[in-house]
Structure formats: structure tokens, C-alpha cells
Length: 406
Image (cartoon, rainbow, N blue to C red; front, side, top):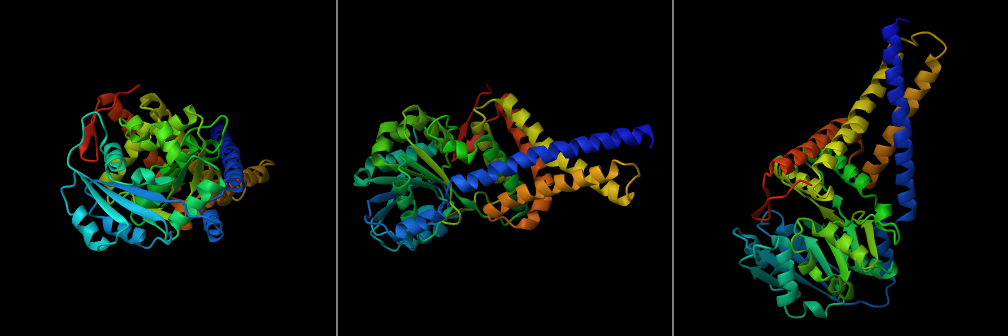
């Protein structure tokens, strides 16, 4: 074979070998997590044999959430837990969020609508809204457990029951459920899984659940605290500057020696995060910025790594396999080994990604689009780094925040 052909084959074979090793390790970590960490479904069986029903208060901050508030409220109305109340903290709403909520609630005595007219300049809107509800709504602090959820979530009818059983069964001070994301639009089917995989790579679930050497992580779509732990960590007043209060709570809980559980909701909590591409890209850039501690160089490094491992190497491996099959061997004693390498590399990659998609309840056909999703996701990481360095304000919850690159 010509020298150039040998060089190309060598590079493609090296890419296939790297992919095989990378995703074999990834698959091992995925399986280990599935075995070691239960999902929210365990709470369903635990709740079925519960012996007590401690009081729970669910607090939801809502800023102009007319798009999703009806779905949330209907799901809360359907909760089967007998000792729960709900507080909807309406944060400076200028749309019909409160009116829609009142119509759907229809006088249910478990609900309180708490309206906030202004937010102090040294607070983020969400943190101030829920802290105002905790401090000002009578009886909230009498609850044994406090749940803070996002307005774009949908609770299964047994969600509160399952979560309450789980937090007591696992003996943790804070329980976070990672919601099952709803995918309808192209970016939710193609890019959202790649974003989620990247975030889980940065913050592995199994590491977030350790008592020692913990990598602090939580999902703010559902945070459940024992009242004692919430007060010990300082409540939302302690994280009033945070754009991602979940990560800040996770870090602070580690600092004060409190136990944290982070579990996949596995269908007991769903979330439709963003209605369009503009909101999606803006929201995920903010998440990536906070997850990287405002370090733009880290975002760039993550973006390059994601594009190489998620797009470039898989396409090179697929190219090697296609070349071998098209040329019917290319000749030489190495061909069977190259064919086995390329086939096993693609197989391990597909099995690892497919397992994640199956766990996340994403359509398995979208595995084929993962290289495209990974490339776009890497672009979002790079865009986040660029915006950090330029000082471009982050718009969130009706306010602007200027984050400084570290």
C-alpha cells in the first residue's frame, strides 16, 4: 500500500483504539453507577410500606412561567401524599402566571400563592423568591421537609411520597432528583442529551453521593432538605448570589459535613426546560459557566475534549470501518485486526451512549445524532467561555448578571 494510505490507516486505527478505550471505561462507570445508586423508582416501593408521613412543604419560584405553570399545578394537585402543602412564589411576574395558577388551583386549601414585588440588588431572583416564601408564609418552617422545585417540572402523582421515603431511607440531609428531560424539538433530541452527558462527566452521580472525596453536585429542579439541614446550611440566604443555587448548596453541604443524595428521577419527575433554541442555548451556557466556576479556559478545554471524543473520533472510526468494508480488506495480514478494532470500537461506543439514552428515556434512534449533538454542545461551551471573557451580561429571571472570567 502507498505510504500515504498507511499513514491514514494508522491514524484511523489509533482513533478507533482511543475510542474503544474511552467508551469502555465510560460504559464501566455507567454500569457501576446503575448498580450502586438507586433511582427515584425505589421510592415508590418504599412509600408503599411507609409507617409515617412527615410534613412536607413544596416551594416553587416562578418568574413569568405562564407557559408551564398549569402543567406544574395540575401535577401538584394530583399528589397522593397526605401531609403536603404547596407555596407558589410569584417572583415579579408581569404575565398571567398567577392568574392561571389561581384558576387551576380552584381554592385547594393546600396551596398558597405568595407574590413578590421586588428583589434586592444583592440577591438572585430565584433565591430571593423562595427565601421570601420560607420567611413570610406562615407555617412553612414548621414542615419537617422542604422541597424547592422549578416551575417547568411535572411531578408524577407519587413523586412527593417517593422522595420523602427516599430521603429517610438513605439517611441523607438533602436529596436531589435529576429530572427525566422531555424531548420534543430537534435541539432537545440532538443537543440536550450531549449537554447532559457532558455535565454528568464533569459531575459523576456516583461521586456526588459519596460521603468522602465527594464531588459536590445537585439538580435545582428538585431539592429536598430536612428542616434542620436547611437551617444549618443557612437557607437560601447563604447562597443568595448564586445563579445555580443547587451547586452552591451541594458545595456548602459538603463543607459543613451534611450528607447528600443525588438520584435520577427515572420518570417520577419530568422537566421541559426550554421552549426554543434561543432560551435553550442561553440557559445551557449559564449552566456550563457556573459548573466550570466561571473559568473560561476550563470551558474551552471541555469543549475541545467533547468535540474530539464525541464527534471527531467516532467519525474517524466509522470512516475506518467503511473504508475496510468498501475495499473488501485492503489486503495484508492486518486487515482482520483492523476490522475487529473498528467494529468493536463502534459497538462499545453505541452501547455506552445507548445505555445513557435508555436510562434518560431518550429515543434510541437519536444515538445516531450524538456526534452532531456533541459538536454543537462543544460550541455552546466555547460560546460560554467567550461570553465570560467579554463580560457579556447573563439574562436570567428578569435580571442581568455580569460574571467575571476566572
